[in-house]
Structure formats: structure tokens, C-alpha cells
Image (tube, rainbow, N blue to C red; front, side, top):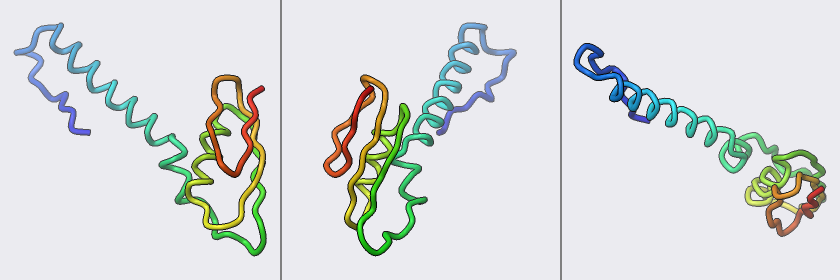
Amino acid sequence: MTSDISGDPSTEDAETMRHRAKAHLSGLFQMAVQAANPAHCLPAYLPPPPKGRTIVIGAGKAAASMARAVEQNWQGDLSGLVVTRYDHGLDCARIEVVEA
């Protein structure tokens, strides 16, 4: 992020300062959301596949997005079931997603 909030307050009006602060905070928020996205933060923590198949079981609001991230980055046999909240489901090929 390249937001600059170091403007000289003595030369900026209050509206300009509010706009710059809001833009900076919005940028920080978007960076935090992106950092928490399972597609970006989960792959680095996946272990090597063990011998045989792997079964994924999960529950929670982010279970479907984490299941999708595992599917997209897993190099082995994989199946499973995750339960997530209504309207938080995603299509997964090898892991069943149930909304409840």
C-alpha cells in the first residue's frame, strides 16, 4: 500500500485531512481482509500429503473458503465434509460443503 498521510496539516483543510485519513484506513482494512483470505494465507501452512488419502472435516463461517483453498493446493487424494453458515457456501470438487 502506498497511501501517504504525511501531508502538512497547516496547509490542508479539515475535509481533505478526513478524506486522506479515510482512504488510508480503508486501505489498511483491505490489506487486513486480504491477509486473512484462506486462499492467500493457508497454502503455506499445508503439510506434505501423507501416504493414503486425506479426509478434511471442518465447521465454521470460513470452513468453505478454507476447504476450497485446501482443494486448490493439495497434491494428493482428498475428500471430506465441512459445515458452514447459510450463504457462506462455495462449490468444492472433492470436499462436500453443507450450509446449516
